[in-house]
Amino acid sequence: MNKETKLKPELPLGFQDRRKEDLRSKNRLIEIVKKNFLLFGFEELETPSFEISENLGKFLPDKNRPMSGVFGFQDDKSWISLRYDLTAPLARFVSKNLDALPKPYKRFQIGSVFRNEKPGPGRFREFTQIDADIVGTTNNIADAEVCFLISDTLEKIGLKQNQFKINISNRKLIQGLFQDLSITEEKQKLIAIRAIDKLDRIEIKGVDQLLSKGRKDASGDFTKGAGLKDDQIKKILQFLKSENNLDKIKKLSSNDLFQQGISELIEIFDYLKEYSKSNNFVFTPTVVRGIEYYTGAIFEAALTEKIKNQKGDFIEFGSIGGGGRYDGLISRFKVTEYPATGISIGLDRLNYAIQQLQSQSYLNDEPIVICVIDKNKIKTCFKILDMLRKARIQSEIYSGDAGLKAQFKYADKRNSPAVIIFGDDEEKENKVSIKNLKKGKKDSVSIDSRDEWKKSDSQITVKMDQLINEIKKIL
Image (cartoon, rainbow, N blue to C red):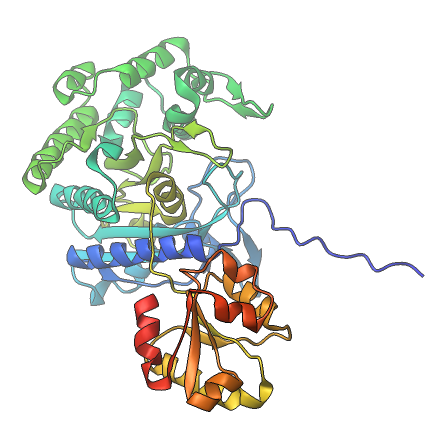
């Protein structure tokens, strides 16, 4: 007889399971972010995970096949895809509800997004994204607001000012430079912008290759380049290597679009000085943002401190969020242009970084375990359970089939702060026994019998009406 082939319990590449440690940190971040975004006057929005594919548009890394980078399928009427960000769904929502929304409209959203891309350290195919956007204004106060929002939020999360910076530039600078260099083909421009956007990962040499014929990475994969001429590449690299000084960089080009970008940046930095005395806001010409719908100011939040990767090596972690002005995205649905600006934070990537940078402690939220040593006393165990839960103390009755030793090991694996026993001795005196596992962590797994348990100095026996107070002392 052929043996049944067993399935392998493996996850697809780029996805992960998350247990309590990750979720505690993640939920803490979400709580702080929500509170701060509301403080800044943003209202919360929720949109579906699936959108009609053509409504999402194609703004992900360039491939030859249509709608690359997304997960989708065809239903009865059209192709639908899992959203790859929260901005495209916002554009669809605003277009549909334009008359009912205030102008400007400030919204934030927290939700899962999906990208069919090659995963890497801290980069997943499914991750949680946090967005905040201001829709319906060209005023540069809005751009300054979202820059200050992300900076202030990162500080409230617990990052120190010397651990991150907000890099700011303007898409009009590189677009104006393209005009100077007579780079007019849209595909060439897009490849060039995405090459520049990878500067922190592939360095100047890699950008040079991608601006030219192409680049082969460490795995042997070849990426076709923009095919620019040597003099065009030289000018772009000069721009990237220039000092991070607005007064000096504006002399690189007299192009109207380039100079307009400089003027907008000067105004944004003036507003940021009023918002905060922080030195975290930095003009960085190398920031171009690879997504093609950006039209003006662009921002990127980046860690300045190295962190350990999953192999234990210290690495430059780089960007933890970014965004910018996208005045044309909503016009895909409406005849008139409807300006917008916003910022996105990759929550899972940020959470990974925070866990490396901070030693976080949390209140123990594992349950008190009520051990069962006599099924005839199970009714009293349920009464004890009811007392604990009415006092809002997380608790459970052991529901397995094993003996007392295994029940202790179960509680130990759960990291339970205490176990409770109600047996013959306790019943006679209307008492309950409590073992403090925080205090007796080491001997909790070595105790084989009830008699040994009684000898432990980490256990007490108290009257039933004192149970809640004693448990609260342990917690």
